[in-house]
Image 1 (cartoon, rainbow, N blue to C red):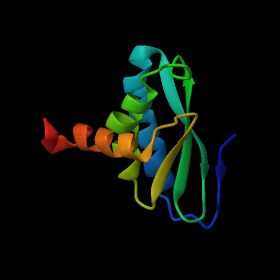
Image 2: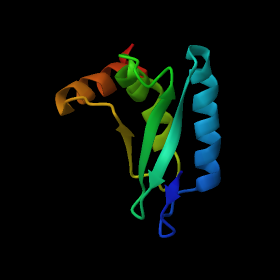
Image 3: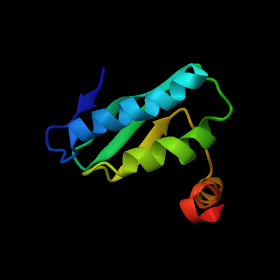
Image 4: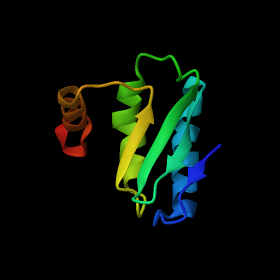
Length: 103
């Protein structure tokens, strides 16, 4: 069940479209991501489902696909993923490696 705080300024229609786009790509690996909650201050919490649940490449998918897509939604201030544990240093390296100008 998705919990959306009514005080949130997140564009829910745009968020739904982005989730659908991300999931179309993730379905090629028999996985998906779903929204758990949206807080009043725009913090979006998601979880990986299906085959992505136990996949060791979740951090790669998170930083290369999920975060860029969802952080671009109006009103989203932060994206958190349940069950993905990455150190801050590793997260920064992943963001840098996955950023568009880095290849």
